[in-house]
Length: 305
Figure 1 (cartoon, helix red, strand yellow):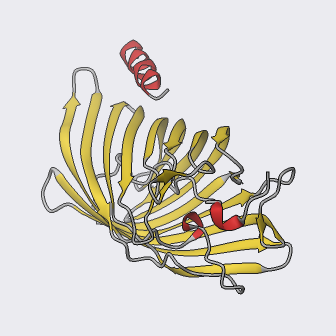
Figure 2 (cartoon, rainbow, N blue to C red; figure 1 turned 135 degrees about the vertical axis):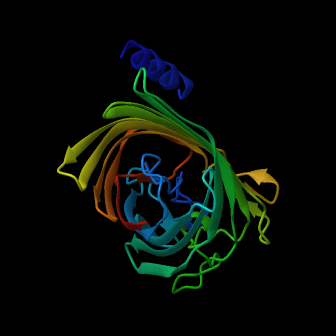
């Protein structure tokens, strides 16, 4: 157990004026903890739903004309499919469908539609079991691409175009890379992961800031009978967004650093998986007059084979 403790410490050390509302992007990252289910190496298909509210500042409020912006609500659903074409390769496709609701003092604006479709692939670099010490290792490396399939120039009732971060899509291509390591000892273990995402410039000469994230989680497996397992997770996640660029100028009201304490549970019963998770903001440093995110909640259900 001492080796597990020191390795956990090692991975923790690695992660460590009024303006118009159309200039304010409410979206931080949209990423949730878990997601790849590294403990469960099966083909799967399912649905995921997440909910997040951004509160706009009251001391120095944001305005859309004469209407004060109060809050943004993000309801994001997606269908996902994972397939193992071989023992070491896994392929993912994620098709999101989102609803955005902006509440203002004079109006409420709602956007909805299919977002940017994502394709990913991961290679199992290391997968080793040690019967002597009862350690199990798993190292995944991969990446993917998002297509500009979502609408990104939708407007409110006054025909004011909504901010890019509030839109369903980005209008740009994006690429990402991610590494995931799991060390398991008997019924407990740690999962650490780090990722980087970068966006291209869209036709409006807007480029969303790149994102870096790192996360470490402790988990424990509780078996109930022969067909029911519960994986309980607790951990910490750090996210950093670079400033957006518009017309080759960095936007002052963009970019952020944030830390999140996360909890989740994976319930596996036969061929079915249910995931429930929450991210609680522990540290927030948002540049300019940006809205601040609240608790992020998610729910997933999947079929395994």
